[in-house]
Length: 223
Image 1 (cartoon, rainbow, N blue to C red):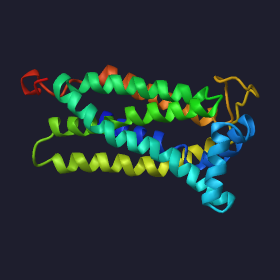
Image 2 (image 1 turned 135 degrees about the vertical axis):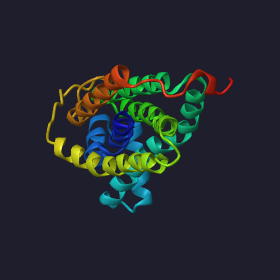
Image 3 (image 1 turned 180 degrees about the horizontal axis):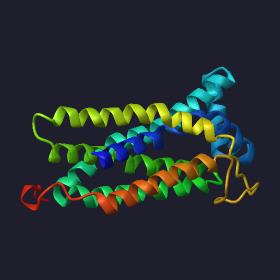
Image 4 (image 1 turned 120 degrees about the horizontal axis):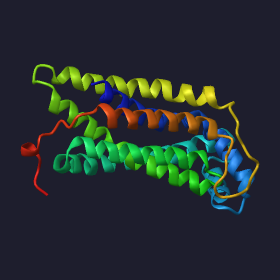
């Protein structure tokens, strides 16, 4: 349960840690890449919708970028869940957690806006492993304790939404900007990204070392 709790918690932290950074991100990448770039044109388009209200533009930008992660998590929850039914929970969790680490590392070196988007896409895809974590709870709990186990998953989601933005805001002042205009380079938001990457690595190592397979071979679905 501890491993499942941490996996779900870190998925939501990865989703929410970026929330307080959206306004600064929009300002940084527009200034870095110019008004004619993809992010510049996006900001201009959002400005027409929001009647040039800067607060509304930042809110819409955050909603769009956040929705990419959430939508992909929603879609891939069924994919990872189905894969874990056939191959087992452990290999699916190891695969998705490795992808989460890669997404965080990509964010660390998101010198351009498109790399940031790629990091969020990869992170959202891998965050669909919540379904696998929930399935592991169902595998290892009896009928009388299953609601309690699912309640632990819900608690992890709630804590992730509470602590994710707090962590992002706390680390926002940790600026590692290299000043480079290269596609892959440190950026003003690399501090929160490094913290997310470290948490993801801890989770991956913990699952690799301590998480046993919970779905026996004879209970697995046929391809």
